[in-house]
Length: 230
Image (tube, rainbow, N blue to C red; front, side, top):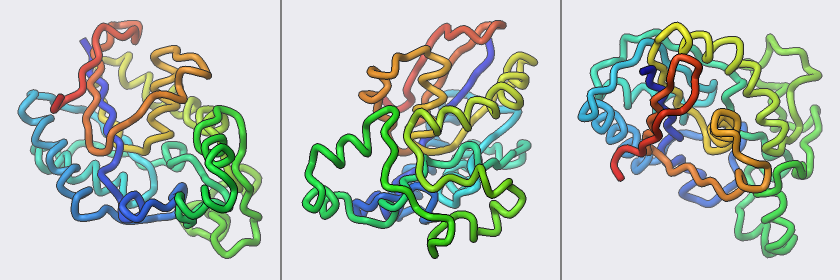
């Protein structure tokens, strides 16, 4: 049986301040650091051992992975970082306070931006000061694929090629894999591997710092799913 583990990064400083984060590179809060370390302790207690780790290019996910691996004595395993596992890009909403945005545009509109499967947020232009096009970590990407905003559908469309090309082959080879990423990139992967409908995926919540463990058979069918610490 092959093991696949998802961890949403620990609480970030903008989770704490209730701001839309997206591709903005925000660090973990003190609570987030402890959540990440606790995830590692749970992994160690469960006896989980990994052959390969994946994460995004955003600090909060990278640090979560490192804390979790360090606590489980596995900081040495091979690690791959990719923008394809980044959080959903929240466009022009990034940096805004969620409560204040709801007061300005209405709860219903903000709920649609946050939870609709295929509705885009207000887009951020490529020449905006906060555009990812100005960030060195994306310098090797074709500028045309750097988003100005994403919904879950678009997030899934950029995550799945990485799953198919990189992650699934490792699992099919019998390797145990850990992925530390973000609420929406992990929801996209969950939707794909569990075959969840467009409507039902909007109700799926990913708790910060909570390891989700899948047992997969030789064809990557899910045999079991467990949340550590529950």
